[in-house]
Every structure is written in structure tokens, then in C-alpha cells.
Image 1 (cartoon, one colour):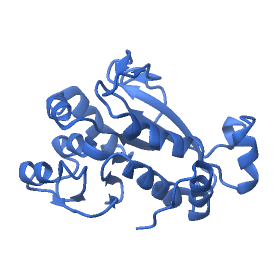
Image 2 (cartoon, one colour):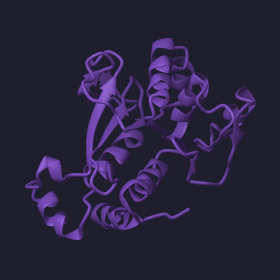
Image 3 (tube, one colour):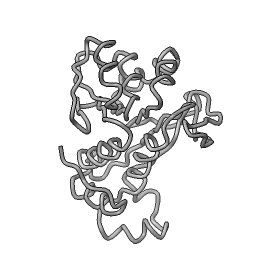
Length: 216
């Protein structure tokens, strides 16, 4: 299917202690993307038809039960791993406080699910310390990657098969991507919009959310 016509299913992973902007920044970008400038008014008036939106965004957690973010916000995911009834095209893996992520990477069910998505052709993109989930699952082996500035040393020292890149907003390895900390997930998401449906759409979204379009 032509990328300009395809509707992309985006899943955003949620878990306890997730950083709010890590997930909500990409959620806003993909939810507020339209293909043409003429559609912006419909989008802002909430009259745009679902089938006219290039991205359908849903949240997913392991169990589908309520999760609590790092700052105490309560979130109810749309799906659990088992109840997810659509095939994803893109999976966003956000991060959280490093100590919480170090604990989270021991969750084999979570890691196996992330790896299984990538193996079926889903684009997997991490935000901030979410890169550690990708690293522990093995899907970053042999690739370049970045993460939050305060976790770069840890990523480099623990995962020797990964080439850690510093001083960038995001790294694209094709169907595996990583971004730097927190707000850099917005930059990466806008880049993905440009990559999948065109740079003009990314610029429209950038204007809609009033966030600079960063072209690395």
C-alpha cells in the first residue's frame, strides 16, 4: 500500500513509573498529524473522520490494568498484550527514572513482547531510557543508539554490542529507532511522520503543536 494512503497503527507502551512526556509527546504528534493543511481545522474542531487520519494511536500495557506514571498520574491503557486486537505498524517504548527501568528490564514477558513486535516487522522506537528495554531485549545488538544524557554511560557500559551515539536527538536504524531524553521523543516522532508520510505533513504537525521541526 502507498505510504501516502496507508493508515498506520501506533501502539504506545505504558508501565508503572513511565515518564509522562515520554509517552504523551509522541501521542500528541501522531494523534494530531494530518496529511494536508486543509485538514487542520477539522482536526482542531474534532470533526475529522477517523479514516482520514494517517495514524491511529492506542496505549498498551502488559495487563491492561491501571498504571501510575512517575509523577503519580493514573492511566488506563486501551489494551493489554493479550487483548491487542490490531497489528501494529509502529511501537513507541517510552522510558522513566533509571532505577525503575533497571527493575523493569527484568520483566521477561515485557522484553519478549517488544522483541516479538520487532520480529514481525513493526517499527520499534524508544524514547529516553526506553532504549534500555530495547537493549535488554536484544533488538539493539549491532545497532547505533542513544538515550537520556544521564543514562548514556550506563547504556554504553552494560551493552557492549551497541554503538552509543551522543549529542543527537534520535538515531534511525531503519525499523529500530531510539531518541535522547524526554522531549527528544517529540523530535523523533515528527521525524517518523516525515519518513512515513512526507516532510510536509511533519511540518504541518510541527506548526499545529507549535514545536520546532528538527531535521537531523
